[in-house]
Image 1 (cartoon, rainbow, N blue to C red):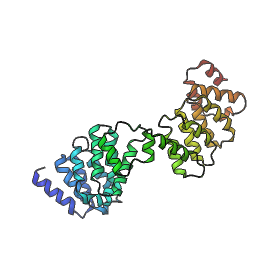
Image 2: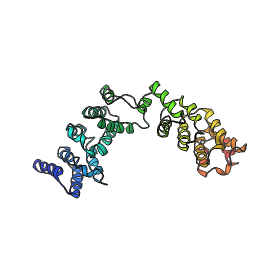
Image 3: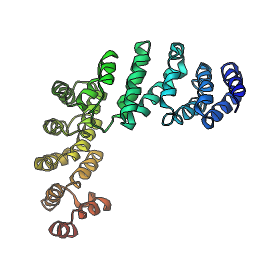
Length: 306
């Protein structure tokens, strides 16, 4: 579009009262070059009446995301306007997605953009939403190699959360997370969060803690621990799980069988437990037997057949 038309579209995005027209503006912004699209987006972001709309927030995000690779700096420039940070649509739908998008790439230039967003945020709420997106981007990834500017910006936002510090391998953070995980009277959400996290990072000290909670009164805690233990190779994991197996409810037994089928040594222990009468062979679905056969262990396969 011409410069004149682009200006008119941006003005319309700011003042348009009809939701279907705003929807079309968002769809058009996605297809236009950044120089024409981003002023339209900036106008649409001010319509807090669209915060709960089924389509508009994601349409606007679709337009923004399409410029993140080609015009990432220009996207961040939009948020130099401090008044935008007060918009509910921005707080609810855009900030965390934008931070997650840049952080997920792992590229230094995008990490610098993450830092700049944190620096631009005028209040604690905005920083909190950005950090939520940052943590989502690092789910299942080690937190290493962050540029100094981003580290400083995170500190300025109140510091990294305990989850991020655990991912970063900080001993004190890991110690605290282990205590939270083991505490039967602690927050269920936090316990499950950290038990799941220990399955994503390599922390051998977590194995005894996870084994200690496989008979926890909370099923979600039991399942989180058993699932995370799949990431470790300790021989005693198999024998310990088998020793608790009969006390598990049906759903937990299923999670335990999935764990025991993961490694050849545990599968051998599992089959021996069946022969010893500790575990009912009839409880095994066919796919778990097939999974154990993938270990390419002839002796194990013969016992599975029997």
